[in-house]
Amino acid sequence: MSAFLRLPGLTPELRASFFHFFSYAGGAVASVYFGIWLHEKGMTNDQIGIINAMPVLVMLIINQFIGRIADRASDWRQALVIMALLAGTIPIGMLFVDSFWGILLIWTMLTIPAGLIPSVLDAATLRMTQRNGTDFGFVRAWGTVGYTFWAALAGLLIARFGSAAFMPIFVIVCLARAGVALQLPRFRGEKREPVVSQVKPRASRLREVLKPWFVLPIVAFACLQATHSILGAFAALIWKDNGISEAFIGPLIATAPAAEAAMMFVWRRFGGRISARHMILIATIACIVRWSLMALNPPVWALFILQSMHAFTYALGYFGLVHFIANWTSEDIAAQAQGFAFVVQQALVVVTLLGFGWAVSSMGAHAFFFAAGFGVVALCCVATSLMLKPTKSEMAAAH
Image (cartoon, rainbow, N blue to C red; front, side, top):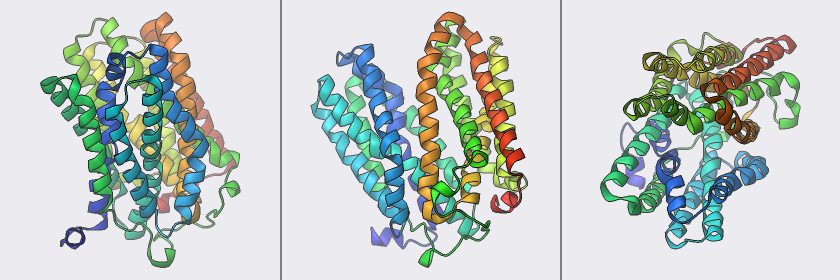
């Protein structure tokens, strides 16, 4: 491993990109077949819902605690390696359980460390690239590319070898992520020196920024994220009910992450010209347009255009959020601050999914108007934040 780390040209950014490519592998594989696998194990719909919801509820409780530990460590790498190792070895237990309680226990235990990785990884990668003057978007984009790759590969392998291959594939990719975590670089500078483009003053305690002007943009992106969870859970069903061929549904779903990755790869060329909160503001406007038009049940060609707007409703909003948080918080609370945003997002996602199922059942595609309504709420949140505390040096930190 040490020889691998000394390979010429293997920069910290490349090593971080490599891990990003694997970071969502388990979730990608699970998204393809986990629900079907549970059904084949004899789980009822209610039990499937509990198995999926329990890890989220636990993460909402412990996220800040884990973030505090990660921030206090000498480097975020330590927390990421430990979480990746746990998320890689615990899944082996899934090969030996069949009962509801056994699956619930093991799945919760493995999903918690895996689910906590993204917020710590985002905080660590952003601080490192700001310090080094490199491209955060390029590094983060490999997470989206990896998710798409692992989901597609899992689908092909399960189609080839049958449902029995699902769990072994899941275990293998989780173990692979754990192995890749061992080559992660240090993310902090020596003696925690400040990043290149530091905005002052930066809060060193989370409670210093838990004020309306800071919380409202986080709530705004949570609203955007909630609409994307709606897309993942219900879009394919709505489109199929509206007579769209399954031959188009797959490419339609794939268009969104492709557009997201494209935005992440090119973001640095223009991202520094827009303040963090204005990125979120643009994303909210795109959200209103995207879901309002999708609620009108447009033709397939228009759906491809609307799906490509994912580059703005998610990728641009995501960049705005992580930079906004980094602009106003110090490295001392980087993981805690990103973790707080994650908690808000997940809480709203859970509430949204519970309510949107009823809307889809009674309204069909018109239920997307509710998603557009979330965009209006998000727009009001960002606008209010800008009035409470106008942007000053955010643009400098966005480089």
